[in-house]
Structures are given as structure tokens and as C-alpha cells.
Amino acid sequence: MFKPLMSRYVSIRLIQGIIALFVASIVVFCLARLTGNPLSMLLPETATQQEYDALAKQLGFDKPLPVQYLIFVSKAIRGDFGKSIRYRKPVTDSIVERAPATIKLALAAAVVSFVIALPLGVVAAVKRDKWQDFLAKAFAILGQSIPTFWLGIMLIQLFAVLSGWFPAGGYGGFRYWILPAITIGYNSTAGVLRLTRSAMLDVLGSDYVRLARIKGLPNRRVIWKHALRNALIPVVTFSGIIYVHLLMGSVVTETIFAWPGIGRLAYESVLYRDFPMIQALIILFVGLYIVFNLMIDLSYSYLDPRVRFVKE
Image 1: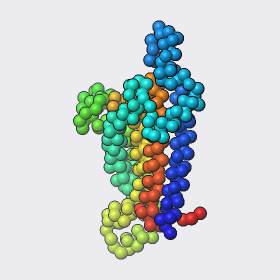
Image 2 (image 1 turned 45 degrees about the vertical axis):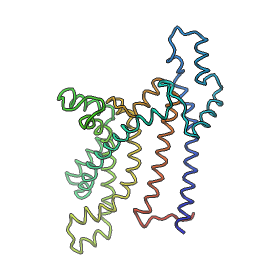
Image 3 (image 1 turned 60 degrees about the horizontal axis):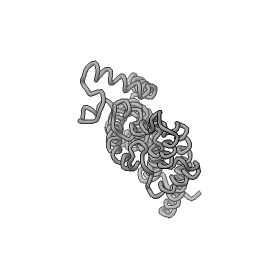
């Protein structure tokens, strides 16, 4: 009974995802063209009208917009997002080249975020309304309030320019990862901390935690084994969203630190009006968001036996 219901649920979510991708493709196709004409970036100011017309025909911009969109969609369905206007090579090749750097940076930022946020969130819940709790909440509010670009610039100024401890930018060994990972991970640290604290407060007041204490189990074991295990369910759910957020948030961080990932590629694509690249990257981000959300929802039923798919 459970498997057919789950299959039906997955099918519905996949159909909704395809509709979302279709809508996103229309929006990004139209908005990209509002950034301006890429021909003016590719040709010199002295170029003649004939040269403009020839390049427009070569890139397919001489066709009506609906026709351009249909060509784009028909190729995208087959995995062909066209050639980059700037790099003059398939868009997918550029994304594949840049993706590893962004994925590694997002993983490093996620590690920074969870390693700091989980213990702080637990301590804040256990020490509710005490100075440890106030410090943790202040840390969370600060992390959610500080703009990423400002934090990145301040870290460069303090730890690269003034102290010289870390490089100001670029891609290399472990020292190159520290500042970008902290920059992109701090905002998420605040979110995970607040969520962990809230979930722990709910769990600490539950009957099974009180029963564990009545049985005489050590307080440390009750908190870090029994309570934290159940409190992690919403945190795990949030982690998938955080990882996609980190990937998308890499646009600002990678630009500040000259990081050669897809975030910086997206920024450069907008700057150079590289329509095929912009379209492919946005659809990639939307697709990742849809897939991660579905995976998280499915993982619920395995993490929490109380959660099951029911027929509406």
C-alpha cells in the first residue's frame, strides 16, 4: 500500500517539477533579453550594419523571439543548451569545467556551518534564557543580518590585506578555502543554529526524554544521543535547502574571491549578456532546487516512522 502511494506522490512531484522548469525557462529567456543586446559587446563601435546583421544571423538572433524560444527548448530537452556567446563553445562544457570548484566550496561551507551551528544550537536550548543562549542568539542574528559581500570584503581586509594569513582570492590549496567557506557559510550557520535550538526545545519537553531522565540515564547521553537524534529531522530537511542556497549564493562569494566556479560564471554571463549560459545556469539551479526538495521529502518517511504517505 505504501509503495504505490509513494510512486504516485513521486510522479505528481515530478510533473510539478517539469511545469516549474517550463515556467522558469520562459521567465529566464525573457529576462535575459532585458539586459541588453550582446552584439554590442561582441562587435566594435565602428562595426557596420551588415556586420551586425551577419553576426545576428550566425547566433540566431535574427529570428522572432517565439521561434528563438522554441529552438532553445527543443534543444534543451535533448541536453543541448547551445554555445556560449562569450566562450564560443558548448555551454555544458563550461559548466562541467566550473562545477567542481563550486561543489567543493559549497561542501566546505556546509561543513563550517554544521560543525559550528549544531553544538551551539544544542547548548542554546539546554541553557535556555541563560547567557549562553543569549550569546548564541546574538551570533545567529548577526549572521543573518550581515550581507555576504560585506563579510567577504571585511575578511579579506582583516585576514589577507592586514595580517597576510590567507590569500585574498584565487583557487588553490587549503588556505584559499578558509575565507570563502566562512563567508558563504556564516549566513547558513545562523539558520541551522536557530533551527537546532528550536527543535531541541521541542524534543527536550517530550515524554520520552522525561522518561529517559527518570530511568537515570546520564544527562549528556539523553541530550546528545536521544534528544539530538530526533531534533535532527527538521535540521536534515533544512540542510538540503541550505546546500542549494550555498550553491546559488556562490555567485557573490566567488566574484569577491575570484573563485573559478559556476557562481562567478553566472556573474560574468550576465555582465557579457551571454544568453545561452544564463539560461542554462538558471535552469540548472531551479532543477537542483526541485530535486533536493523531493529527496528531502522522501527522506522524511525513513527518518521519522510517524511520517507516511497517505491517500488524499
